[in-house]
Image 1 (tube, rainbow, N blue to C red):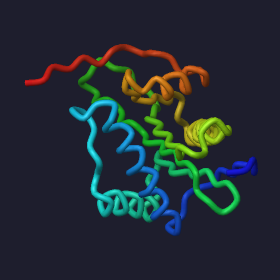
Image 2 (image 1 turned 90 degrees about the vertical axis):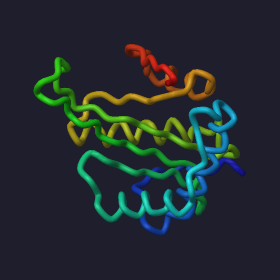
Image 3 (image 1 turned 90 degrees about the horizontal axis):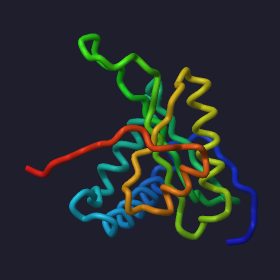
Image 4 (image 1 turned 180 degrees about the horizontal axis):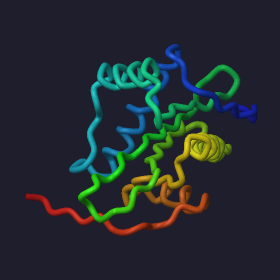
Length: 162
């Protein structure tokens, strides 16, 4: 892959097959990190999800893609978190989860940074003041990537297998 410019744009229905490929490749990499946590979703379910997102354009949900020449090499989803119910102690906070995927062959070319920057701009324009990325602790590259972009630990999630 040569050094062509990365273009980030909103995803369209014609991108669904490439989005499915990116999601499945990402799942395969995560399965190697922790097979007790991750799985490879059915391609048809992933396609159905992306088509639904693109058809509904839900408020607080963005799906952006990175393209080099005519090939999709990455994607980012921004998914708004629900507000806590009024009986809980958490303050209402417009926040969202960000999920970034970059094709292996396009890494270290600024694709992830371009996607994350576009996601942050989109979130700010839609009233979202806080983004978080749920990263598995063994995914050292992703942890470094988000830390380089100013993301830091916030709280701790504790689980117990029953």
